[in-house]
Image (tube, helix red, strand yellow):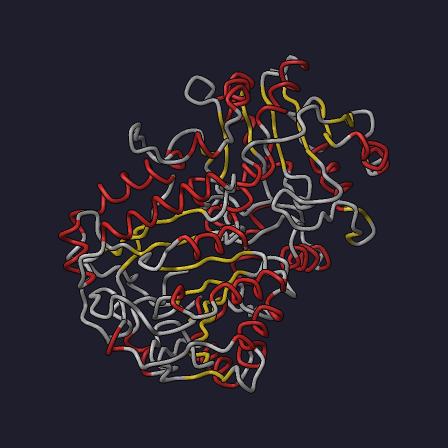
Length: 545
């Protein structure tokens, strides 16, 4: 068996659209140098190829380690554009820390694998197998790569792809050449192979032989170890400075231990409520109408300050949602302009879709909102009317059709459309037709769990999904909500702001995030005291990411 290793390098821009750090110094060596060295240590790889633009070949050659130059070839790419590039970037923004989870089934391997380019190289080199890895992966584990290649050889009669459930950057993906050729001819990304398809359903590939059975620490840990964002760089630099071995299991355990207590400088994601006005005040499955205190519309200055703070990190995410309809904010276009002007990485809008007219759609496309999450909560008109308290499904579907038409006319990937249904006693029978129907129509859909908001709403859940043993809430360490009156509650279950952590009129987001209320809540959770607020004691959402 002939196996080649492939790293595709871009010294200007990363695959996810951030600044390339391949030439940046990581404790005395460029990132790309470290990645090439790790790939060169894979015993089963016969030769390593570094692919790059013609104008970057000399610089990439200079970063090949001296002791690896006999096994490494730097060459120019031949296919300059990949049709799915912008789709992958947009779809991965909310799942950078995991190997999968991107919209439409997009996964980590889609970021660094161009099947058309790899197919050409593999055919030319007469390779049976290709190991592909991200270029900015200085902690790539060669022992894990060897184990995956050997596993691929043992299961070659069953599978033409071998991947592993691991934090991005610790491993690559092993492809049989014939699979690359098939996908390359169709310009199909690898995620297409692993994603769910309602018309050809199959067992989750993570349960089949194509998934290498890594250790628990590797499978259960999360955290981006590809040096292409500020946070990922900080994590990698911290681990390298600590002198830990480049071993996926050790790194996975380190990530889990770190995640149990670490609090980032700012939340990864902030949900901003623009207004509590809503056309569906009698909706059963979420706090609306009289259940929510009247607030807003939020001041533009607050949105602008939040966006400016969040943009200090190049992977920051903002969701416009809360407990009202964001499209009803009278200056919605200005809100989007302020967020995008600040340089926020990912922007999503959570809407009921009723106000999705041509003017607002044009604004969503012009400001390149990444995700439009349309909460439908019904597949049939009867169920929709029963849970939303109004017969508006046909109007919303017409608005969705208008959106897809205008987006196609603009030749824009964004916004990606994600219809959502809340799993409840009222909607359970429609889950399967809803999910499959919308996957066929738009490429993806979301089934979310019902929340009774810590006992503030009736419990309509089909079953209790909380684990038997409680642990510290992750949400209060990674996410924040800002209400339309400028209040930041301790968590998103507090839809009336009864337990504020700060006021954005007079405090910065960072001051609220690290203030005494949030700090005390996290410490009590860490110590096993889940009465940080009266809502914490009754909460059933503490286990969700």
